[in-house]
Length: 360
Image 1 (cartoon, rainbow, N blue to C red):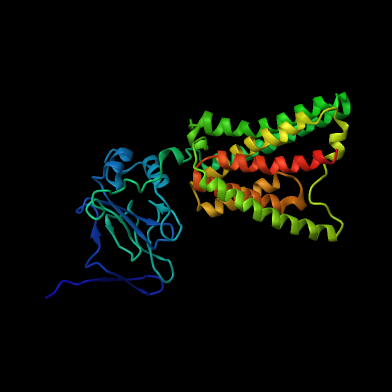
Image 2: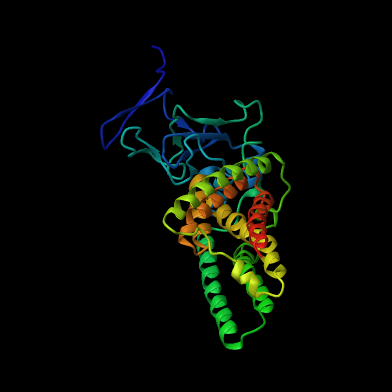
């Protein structure tokens, strides 16, 4: 009698018959393999427990015996699965029809099912490469949690509120010289954004500067970002024209503020130099970087772009700011560096200030 070439697992919920091209449920312990399913439960990742990269991360322990911290460390280093979801120790194999569980995760059973889209990083099947070159670089993985991201955002909001309150008190009660309050206010606005980054990423989680995006980068995606800015300005011009039809202006004109200052350069420095650096470190290096470690990067980019746009406190500028935020996040995703986005941000703010200065 010939050995069967496939097995059929009937879903207990919908009765759908799930076919797998394997003669029986594979035993991970017998074959010295680790396995994970993705979050949708429709793809399998396998690797050898003798893999040097795996041993370096986990001490060579069997996957079902890893601590929660070791599980999370491995999950964070794995790239996304073919359908864009994350690999997880908690997710079971699921029915291809109704997504009901049909086999447990690696923490519950050593038997696994191999889906058609399986990613096999076993040493024998990859000519000895295994997980080498497959795992994400440790330096690009954010050690801070999603909770740290939201708490950091809350800290930035609270500190900004306090800072704005003090600024108005200073302006209306003490009435300092225009140059003094403009320079102090602008400087404090940027320090506020860097404070939660220092507290949650550097102080609490001991993140390195490289993990915050302070790394070298190639020029390809900087050039691509400049190309995307050209497209942005085309959209921006069309958007500004639509607003003008209703007598609306996209952003508040800074020209009257500049006229009140004896010299505009402290404010120009804050807008052109300080703002791009601080905002890119906070919104891309800290916020987007932290979110993309726990969700698919396009969603993290959308969330961070929306928060970046909301931070400008201008409803009519929300769409353009959102588009810029997504461009900066995309460039960060492709380079793992905060510098290309900072340069692009610098170019955008420089052009805006150049237009304002030309009207003085």
